[in-house]
Image 1: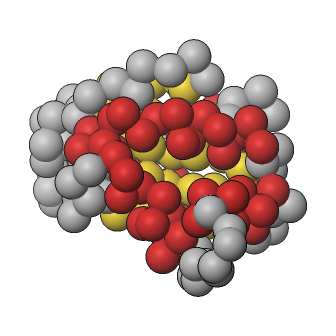
Image 2: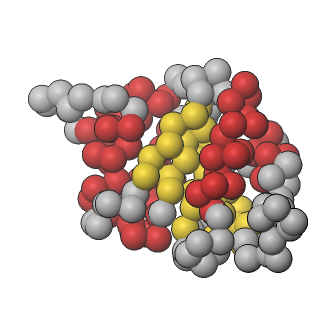
Length: 151
């Protein structure tokens, strides 16, 4: 279900929402593995668990994208410039810590037509462009695996 939605042209962003430990990060990484060929410029995983303030999201994005801050240019504008011409899946893990930064993501989506975003969060992204998929703990299958709606 997640991969199918991200393959659609009209879907730019999906939020995987669920309680701690349900497997949101694992599912996002499985989706990234399956969809790598779809994105010419690849997949960028941005862990936000150590970011405590919304203002830390842009520096975390820049670090994950290997963007060095240049004097005279805002870091956000540099990130937008780099992403503007790319076909990239951006995974933002643990976004619940920085929910007020959702405007940054909305601005990136508006400026970068080849960008798609997969967010993991305890709380909903609550934005018009995002589709939310709620995850719950399922009964473990024999061998300890859990079935998720990946395709």
